[in-house]
Image (tube, rainbow, N blue to C red; front, side, top):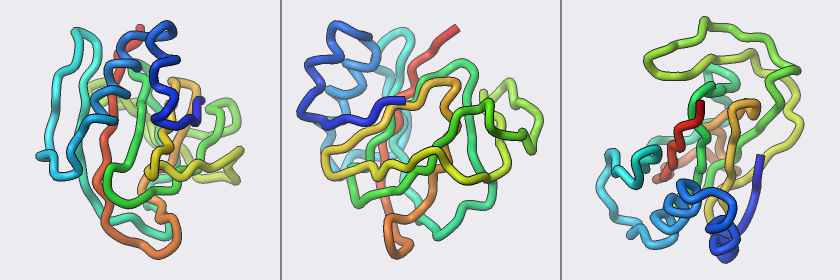
Length: 150
């Protein structure tokens, strides 16, 4: 897992081109960008979404086998608890089509608040629990960069 500032995106140019292109997309995105999918490279896309955060989500942690998630809120903030998969118990079967498994909620190993210049990168071993409010529940607009991995 990575937690970093958008001010540091040039560092990622030498690490991973898909993550770098995604971070450039995030940094240049207008907060009024339309919801939907935006292709970035052959192996990465941006997904713009919006929803209401909650005190607690109803599904627990989620994890993906074949994508890295780069997550950032362009409107407001979201708190995301996270934990390594090895500590968790699945509560659903792996969904091949949507590439996710949900896991029971357990004390997190950490949390990150995304938005206000801070983004998070979740790798396949990083279970994350989105939809949590950073304070009072409310509206967020979020960009998730989906980077394909084998």
